[in-house]
Image 1 (tube, helix red, strand yellow):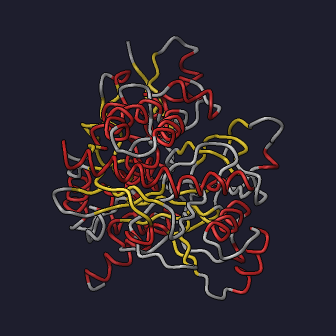
Image 2 (cartoon, one colour):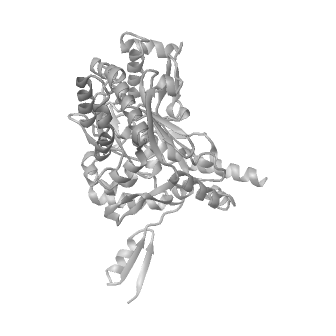
Image 3 (tube, helix red, strand yellow):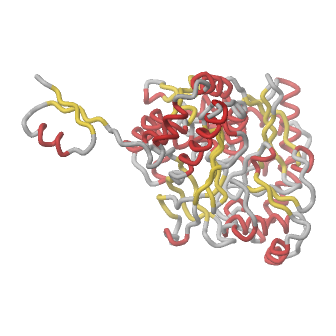
Length: 466
């Protein structure tokens, strides 16, 4: 019996199938508009193949270990009035509601103002305050990603190279600073984290490190992906495994037993606590691929609530940006789409490394939070292999016969197929002070990939002397 291969619209396939002929449908679409010339240039770059192999190998060769917890003033050199935020660079005038709310709360936490509302005038004046992306200081921040000097940071290290990355401690869900809330309850929690939780975790992490070696965060990621976590919106197994490793040192730390109990209750009741370890682990791996000339691999995807930006291994620290998109998903309580701010946060570093939305198939329980279906999750994970350079053998998915997660987003493949990276994310309220309003699925703005491709093509032509 004959088989017909159909490319493009289904009209021919449906007609042939009606005549009892087998049809194989090929999901093909033309490259993104306007990319033909740049694609031809970059694909023919003699450096590209080896450069991408080096980039993927460098990323996969990193093992992230938790070596310390310390204030941002010590490990990042942040000074009074300096604020880090998620996503590409932005100023106060263009900042979204949740980013403004987090900055206002951060200013109150640092004692720059008594009332968070008073911080508006402070940031409008620009006097003695500055904003800088977390990524520019080897850090990542979930949602608004605001980091101030007194906040405590997880410190992760690649023991082979000594490179380090950083992330703040997770506050939980709902009305929290990272979603732009800044009420009295938010500030009270942040002060407790500064005065109690941070010092206790520092003691436990250092004690564990010195007695038995640092906690292997990459190893925990390997296990949690096989236990139903995708490490972006679901971190339940990861959080409990971290507690398993640190709780003996917390209990024997000598800290007040009531503080130890409250800290363990706080971490154990916050399924997202491990997210702030998964994110710097992913950044540590991806940063190993930065600066490889000719590589078309994406090394960062980040959003500030206004802009979505990517960085590429072969184009240095340059950002390629477009408007952040609204997520499509489920809302808390009476909130609806009109209440949501466009996509925000550095947490898409998980998808950049091949987990999160790329590993949806391993976490079917997550679809009930972000508004998808189990078949959608399986299809999404399979589809991401079409835009990546390889697979991560350490991060495998049982339901897909332990296939490694899709790893190394390739700008040329995104432009050639039109398939965009899938991100699952929380949704912050559009208005400063509201907090979280839902969770859902989102993709980057398509135009940023042709921008990156054009820059790669320009560098290729410069090297060739054309």
